[in-house]
Length: 189
Image (cartoon, rainbow, N blue to C red; front, top):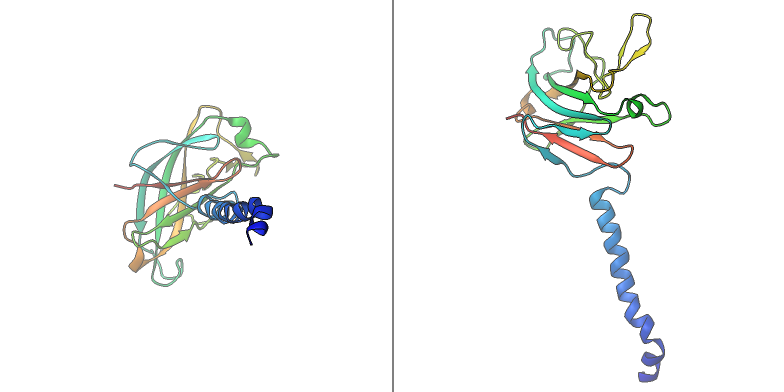
């Protein structure tokens, strides 16, 4: 047995170390997000600006509106509206077709329930002229994309359908993923 251990001691010592590193790395990857998407939120205090890709963003307001008629919303739902103000830091990165600026938006309740943003919600909840994308993109009258200019401040809105009984302590979140994952959860109060 001693001869065998002397002969293979390097492997006997390295095997558990390799296993520990291998499983440890996979656990670390799963924790921080090995799929290019952030999995843990970075909390943003009320009114604070954060860098979100080529823009700097802050939450302006979070409102919950009741349905004006039963046909507009899913049953027993309200519309949660998060209004953001952003400033363009890098217009080339913002409008580049090779590297599309993308951002995911969700809203999280105090109980940990999460809902995706719902695009296409308009009057009376979101005005027609207001952008619903993080890039501030809107359309011109001839249906061409219009982006904010370098250094220009713009507002955009994300809207969500939320069950009425769960619409408490809502915190909007934004994730930006092309270069590195960032997942910001904005404080409302």
